[in-house]
Length: 360
Ligand SMILES: [Fe+2]
Image (tube, rainbow, N blue to C red; front, side, top):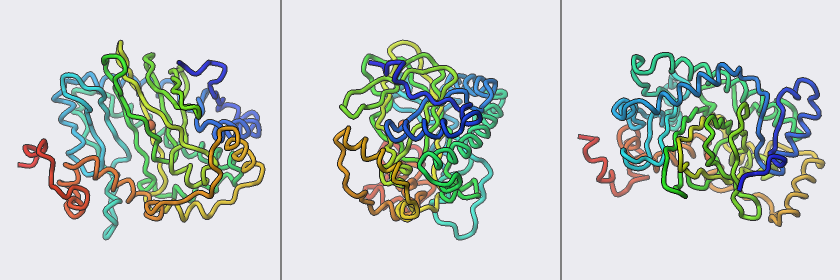
């Protein structure tokens, strides 16, 4: 079942210019009560989005050997190409990229290496596409910073209150763009398992008509979030949930692969500074009663627990270290090649046999 059109949480970005208090009130309501919005009439020019979509489809149409040349295991920064499932019948392909030319300061912790260069396809195979992706990334970075100010106000904080989590050094902000391709699969094939995004905020573009993204309602029912041209789905991530003590909640979502045609999506992931410790950051914010009352009303309506938010051990670590730990576990070959000191901690039995040929 799809979300009925009348229940889609649209948020008109142009309202932020015309009637900011109304815009902030709508954002507050939709984030507290659902955890995501369909952002429409946003500031990114249509031409920039169209070129990005064109580049995305062209990337995944490259010959397999050209995509494999961009393998994520080639760099330390978790950028590049990744395929789920066998080469002849993948269930999902993805390509990640982020800020280039990041220089590490001497003595930087290992987790500062999580962002850096990307193994790009040969320009001759991919004319103009890298530039289109860089242009899109630049616009999304601007949107993300502006939108963070609005989120801050929606939570009842000063417009710049959340900026301290993002710091001025862009290289530490944990921004990443992820292109996704879900090829045709048999019915009910999982494209992306149920999860909440672990970052701060996600800006998702769904450029193809294929359905697939689903959110779980408080009742447990899964509902489809249809692609709507000219919109981004902006959703709350776990870090924002934790920093607000659950005032806003990261929605559980999944992707079911299409049975006809190919589904593409483009996610822009906004994290907090690598050095931010989530539990410490959370202690800095006091939310007004009016906003806390909205949370309480949601909890009563949805039968949620109202217990005090409990932080885990990881919440006391720098956010970048938490991300690195997760990624080292998920990408054994990157851990083996680029993080030899940390490799044994996450892979005490050594490198899985399937990578044997990759390291000789
Ligand atoms: Fe996600």
